[in-house]
Length: 110
Image (tube, rainbow, N blue to C red; front, side, top):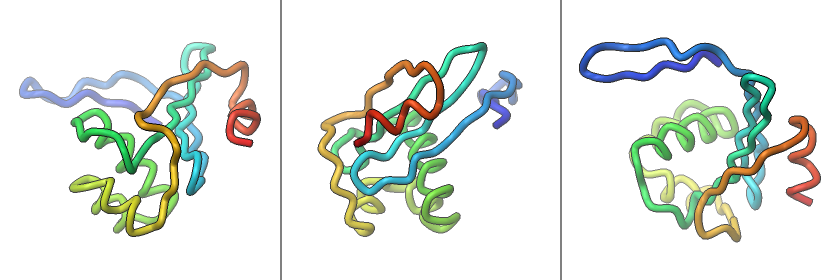
């Protein structure tokens, strides 16, 4: 993925990172690799409060796992999208964890 930061001054390129999405109805996650670091964002779509940064992650997640229309809907209200798809995620809020390698996410979600 190519990452950009948009502001009133325009769009600033922040480089590329490898990313993966774990499509799971109970333990959804986004995994990224950048600068030799692997990080997973464990999502809590039913419980988390809406913020601009979180909206970007949920839009990406639902677009990749459920299609562009789900992503568009998630940009407006990701909790409603998660509920309509019957997500049952036990986390109360998203959290970030470090991983040794992207495949390590599988041991966290079992």
